[in-house]
Image 1 (cartoon, helix red, strand yellow):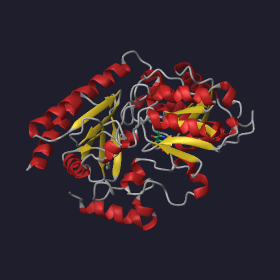
Image 2 (cartoon, rainbow, N blue to C red):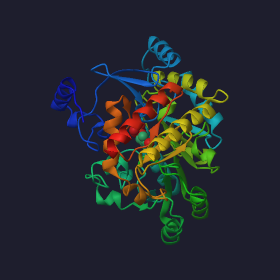
Image 3 (cartoon, helix red, strand yellow):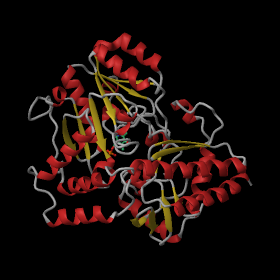
Image 4 (cartoon, rainbow, N blue to C red):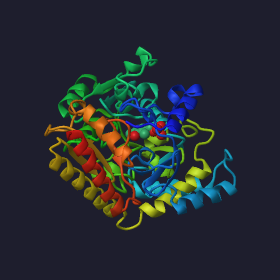
Length: 431
Ligand SMILES: *Cc1c(COP(=O)(O)O)cnc(C)c1O
């Protein structure tokens, strides 16, 4: 692995006053070794680091940059918004417009509230489910990440996995005991759990395509089984689309897999790269939120005008005919090329795609539909791949337990370059 003198120095300076030199642990290179690359700027499909090296980017700020970086229309919208003032702490028309757009695209959402992050959205959705049902227990699935609130940091996927601790320290046992963790894609375990505790379960929260333990697709009937059990036991079904919303399809994963949630959480893409989150859903449940109801939630900067106007501009682009078809086709080309290259090199390697997100697996397992199967993938092979690609100007997430993302700015030439870099990296790994 190569670390330039400048990058090493930047990391040392960052680490002086910032824990681990990063403001979110997944940015540290703990999962792959080395130190993080400091980024100076980004445009389209590319990042440039502080040494002016260019990278083709498959992280996309962990999902939001579906149009590529610094899209001129988004930049213009943000500039115009900034001219009009950065925040007022009072309602704006842009908030109404963005709420209208999202409710128009997602029929499951009658009412929606904006937050500053996905974490706030999921945290509040859980509180809302508890307030609405007057029950305490929630079910989440192993390897699913729903942000870093206490109730949800139990066996929570990538960030924690990379650091070798399934559950965060500092979450009181009294909190954690209200979070039941079940295996993803295991319908029998879910039925059993509801049979035992059904009347105490406030809600179930799930990543409809798990993207925080690499990528795991929902098995046929898994999401439908959650729906049916939530109906039977009057529990609230929360689909966490912070990552998948407007990423796997315009209507998100719940539309793709044809299942109706009671509450949906959103983030990432809806702010086009500005800090944002949202939760919404059935009117009857959403009416329990303050000021209409007794479940409290608030935010000084919620519905921030920059984020709202960036988001509105984002939707203009992703609502255009053929946007997702093109994105999907481009990604399919990339994945076919990577698989071919691995196959030619004799490396056990698989890929999976849902819309504009994908997973890479160094494994010869046939079944890659569970958390356990993710743990069996070859992490050392991934580390070699990661550093080989990085050196050749391709930027993947620095962990074997993350999904990857493509943007509409990735050209044929970018795909070809990525495949060529993979050919060289696979050859190096084999040697
Ligand atoms: C990123 C993510 C979150 C948390 O969102 P933040 O904006 O990072 O707080 C929640 N749920 C899922 C599925 C995510 O991918």
